[in-house]
Image (cartoon, rainbow, N blue to C red; front, side, top):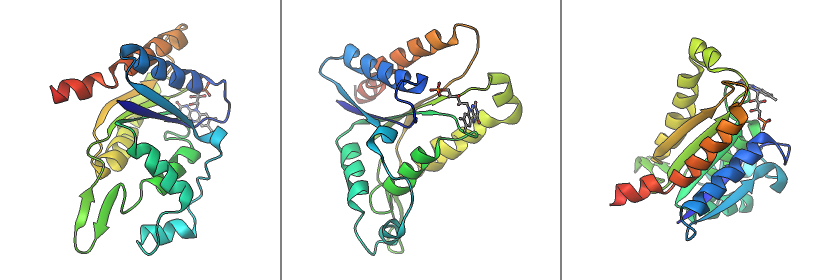
Length: 202
Ligand SMILES: Cc1cc2nc3c(=O)[nH]c(=O)nc-3n(C[C@H](O)[C@H](O)[C@H](O)COP(=O)(O)O)c2cc1C
């Protein structure tokens, strides 16, 4: 099985980058027959700006632009999609949000036409979400940010397209050794990416 790990962070050696790498290691260590591709949106220079061609595709007047079709094809090749991102303003970074705006389009992620209504098209895609935050759990809980982010991202985006969110983790500061603990969590997450899919299938 194959996983696409998409992450968005401007600095190649960042903690977020290391988390993504640990998840990839976990996937291949759990089963060397499985594979993981890391899509580093910043390094690849993905343009997140929703443009006129994207609007035409959204209205189903034109095909998806070539850069969007390429991203859709690499998700089509994957059995699982893992998103790893730093929390920016209680959400994902703008580049990753723009990737979703452009790539998860009408006619690919879902259908929305007068004839069909809404049809969820990503039901085969297992999704894992890993948000790396700087604030502590108390702040998230007091203000309802855990619930707000899960409503907006897990439900608002992935459930809309029918893609099951298998895990949704927040890696946030807890104690002085939280970085090491988070890397262990990332490795465990990687080892389990296809475990849930296989036990569902069994
Ligand atoms: C623009 C910006 C906005 C941020 N907003 C939040 C936030 O809303 N909540 C939070 O927990 N951390 C926030 N942070 C902290 C980052 O999530 C944190 O620094 C990052 O996850 C650490 O990972 P890194 O070392 O890979 O950068 C923000 C950081 C930046 C730069």
